Image 1 (cartoon, rainbow, N blue to C red):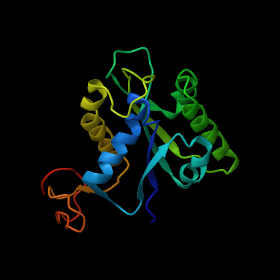
Image 2: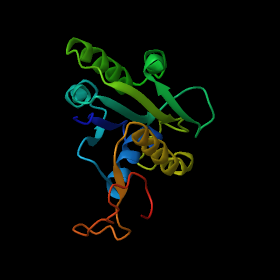
Image 3: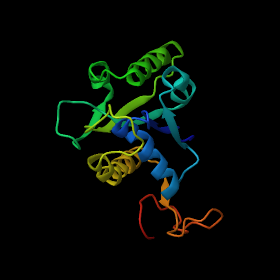
Length: 183
């Protein structure tokens, strides 16, 4: 039986403080983890419709982003497929609207991935700057835990890289380890 293709897609604009949250989470995951062959991590930036190929390839799609939901900055959200159109339209972010359109176009290709959006309530998405707010920085690790929990739910495999993160080093040999941390 062929494994489902899982894509973890970080979206946002790293030039506007917390708007780059999804990208920063995916970058850190790429640095710290090794993933099974059926899992792709994608820095989607603000590519919107240009992500159609990545999105339509996936059977399961996990989108990581900043999500305005009238909450307290740092609140974490998990939005399932049925709730995505309302929440995305209310976000007032062009990349989110493009993401919704790309998901809609997948219907024409008859390949719509099961989609979950994981996000945080941003503190600041308007200030020009590549540094996230302290609130967003403090939520990167907890968000990684949420993404890994989604991968566990979907049967994805991953393992934490060795602590010496120099290119060319080997990873911990944990056999069929699916969880972070030591073997």
